[in-house]
Every structure is written in C-alpha cells, then in structure tokens.
Length: 241
Image 1 (cartoon, one colour):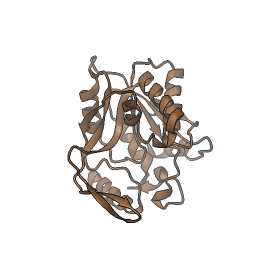
Image 2 (cartoon, one colour):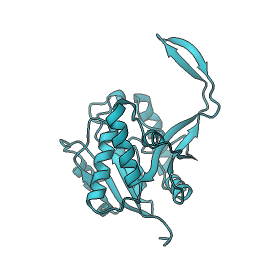
Image 3 (cartoon, rainbow, N blue to C red):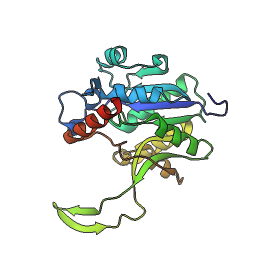
Image 4 (cartoon, rainbow, N blue to C red):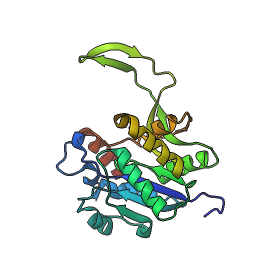
C-alpha cells in the first residue's frame, strides 16, 4: 500500500427491511448471482487496498449475517466487524457504526466512507477514485451522477410543474467524511428533523459545508424495487463471464 494512502474505514448500514423491494427477507440478504447481495458489496469493499475496517451495522435481532460471512464472502474477513446495534433509520445505524469506530480507537480525523448495503454493484476502482479525489480535502465528498431525466414535481398524482435538471446530481455512495465531523453533523440533524436525514452529505451540508461531487457511475444504483434485481443480476453475471 502506498505510504501516503489514508487509512479508510467503512460503515455499512445493514439493518433495513427493504419493504419496497417486495421480498420476504431483508433485500440486502436476497440472492443475486448465487450470493446474497451484501456478500457482493463486502467483497468489492474488501478489495479496496486502503480499507482498514468495514463496520457492518445490522439489527440487534439479526440471525443471518454470521452465516453469510462464513459461507459467501471471500477476502480478509478480519477487517469486517459486525455491530448489532442497527437503528430504525439509516442515520441511527450509521451513528452506531461511528460510535463503534470511536470505541476501538479510530482517530476522530480518520476518513469514514458510508456505503449502502444495497449498492452491490460498486467497484473498488470507483471507491479508489472517490478516495483519491477527497483525501486531501477539508470537507470530503460523495459519488454522484448528473441527472439525465426530465424532472417533474407531483401534486395529487399529476404533474404540477417541470423542474430544470441543470446542475442537479443524483447522490450515490460511498460518501466520505471525517469521523468526528460526520458524527457531530448527524447528531445535530437528528435532534432537529430526523426524517430529513436521508444521506450523510445532507447532514454535513447543514454545518454550512460543501462536499465535493465526485462523478460516479450509472451501475452504482441502489437496489430498491423488484425490477432492480433483474438489472443487477444481469450486470453481476456479465462481470463473471
């Protein structure tokens, strides 16, 4: 590893039930290309050379993750830490992960990359691109892609008006920020309006800071709806050929 590379720590909120995905089990455990979705996510992040810790935050009642790790995940599993303190929201799960990192002595200025468990098509190269772009920045940044579609504002099931797409980006993950700064931002936002904390960047923005937008890739989408599984399956199978 390059001695100038930063030590990177990941937090993966993995306590959701994935209700919109239309599955009987949490979507992050659904099978794709012969493996649970979370296994593909973890294997990609384990290939990031500078990764020191991958903090996987699951529900306190989770009974599946240990079996998945032992059966399906290939790589240095000593880097993966399971934290069974996931909350009812993404932000609470992320905070639990940050507190665990603090508890094991990770410095407050260390870089933490928060990644969605359901973005299982992430590539190590894309993560390395984010790290290289943000590692010397005072704030940090996130993967994102410019919005290509025409945007409509809805009201009562009808179009209220058309929104200009110029300058608009669709946020992805990982999102890369300093441990202490991110924890402080999330705590502050949760105390005011928890329902609006949908990603880490929005919390950082509430401090008056401007994260870097780092160009991501269209395949790094979040699997949310039933049809997304078919697309992800096709992409994963194409990578295995």
